[in-house]
Length: 282
Image 1 (spheres, rainbow, N blue to C red):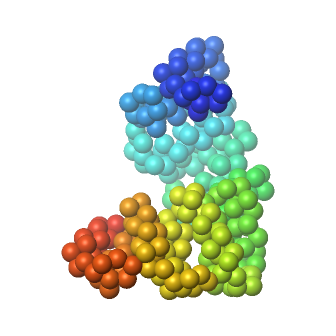
Image 2: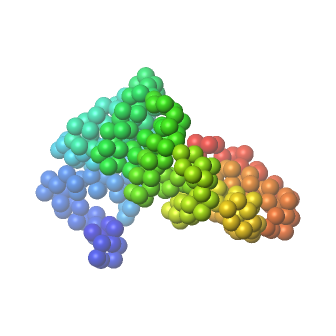
Image 3: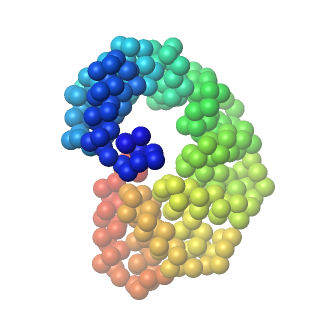
């Protein structure tokens, strides 16, 4: 309640005290919340060792989210050495405790061959289980697999179906990808208005690919009136959030004087920033 401001002002210190009181009474949910606050640095300095300790306590009591979070710490190497095999072990325990998110992450490990032999068919199976349990990231990943033909035959209409389901659950990446499907006419009739609507929604939800694509449509007048200044505005928003392609596109806008006064210095600055961003960091 106090952590998220539900009916009361946000008060992390009060939340910590409430969770500590509940944890002392053996409430696994409170232990998990304490772990999350230490992991994220909400109300306390970030402390991965404390987070691990609380997640372990929640996990020892069979709490699904605690087991999931413990697995994720090992997957990401937070406070511990990265250990994909141990992460996989904990994810399987979380699945037994009812975690749909763990099903999705098992799928991701199979997709990337981390801690297990790479296997797209098993990846798709686990994504499908997660999606069937209502996990929006699982739904997105099923759509992604259909779009790329990984573990299943390439199927754009099926990709659209699953992206739609994930988008209805407010998954910003799915919203953005739906925009792409409508813009390109993949699995659906080409419809720039719907593409713009989905990009705009995804951008409002913080998706940088949608910001970049929306900027491109403004720059080129694709489905809406050409507007260089609006293109620059969206490229800038995406670039400031670390989107490499947006940095490169913004540099080109400054070089050409499109939507902004020509400025080779700023163009150079954005190109230099783009050089130091990898695809994995976007």
